[in-house]
Image (cartoon, rainbow, N blue to C red; front, side, top):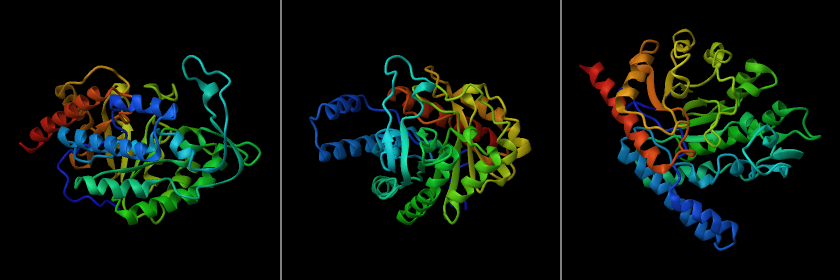
Amino acid sequence: MLTYTDLPLLPTQLVGSAGVPSWIWVFRDAIAEGKVGPEDIRETLMDAVNIAIQDATEAGVDIISDGEFFRADFTWNFHERIAGLEKIPFERRLGYPGPDQLDAFRAVEPLTVPNGYGLVDEVRYIKTRTHKPFITALQSPLTQAFRIDPGKVYKDKGEVAWALVPFINKELKDAVAAGARHIQFDEPAFWTMPGGMPEFVKMYNACVEGVNATIGVHLCFGNFRGRPATSDRTYKHIAPYLEQMNVDVVHMEFANRCMWEADLWAKYGGDKILCAGVIDVKGRSLETPELVAERIRLLLRYVKPEKLWVSSDCGFSQTARWLAVEKMKAMVKGAAIVRKELMG
């Protein structure tokens, strides 16, 4: 259900995470050293959320987020809310992250999420800080399962993901009841479903069943420490199944892939909205507004202007804050250039 009626042509949208303020890193060290208490942490995360909202608003972004700072970390916060897991200490702790550091948790009993994922509190807070449209993003069950060893409880990661579906569906409904209008699934692991794309679509639709909001799905290839999770970065396998997904907005990354596969949308996009990544968050350079406009013009060969939203490839959590702010400004200015051309 598309809830937006007042967006401009080629609206700009954030994916979720924001560039991290420098003082957050110092505060994390203080937490590790036991120098701060729960109220200190709460106050600091609120300050970070306020800055994320301010940065996005001042940059002129149309659909913003809270920067996801209440989660502290994209993965660990969600998993620590799941009962029935134990942490797995990595045998290799030095050097760059690799596939031997994938399974960070193991299922030791049937999984539950007794106190929810925290979206309700996030929605309630951001509504006190802004009147702008905002997304409420949640890591998909498959992406959560991506880091979980099934242990002796489940036969594979797919079964782990299905076990989380009822809790995610409830969380989304609770978030909507709290005031969320735009739900977004963050899904960098869609290519890992044991049953392939048909099972992935079935699981996704089960998650959003009965959720009355704009529904988006962010199909990316991962952005951990500025690196993708897979070298096979293609949408050719999932594109034919997009029409079966109960989703209003499909977010896909294009900028860091030289806009490759944008033509797939003409064949498989249907009447859905394409939220296209035109900002490369895995690159350390800064795009010019003219380059952003060039990328948008290319996309318009395959999607109608009224069905195109503009975004970055992924969130900005792995991008230096100052660079994230400048990239947001370039995105907004690039969209404005093409919007002016379209409107004459």
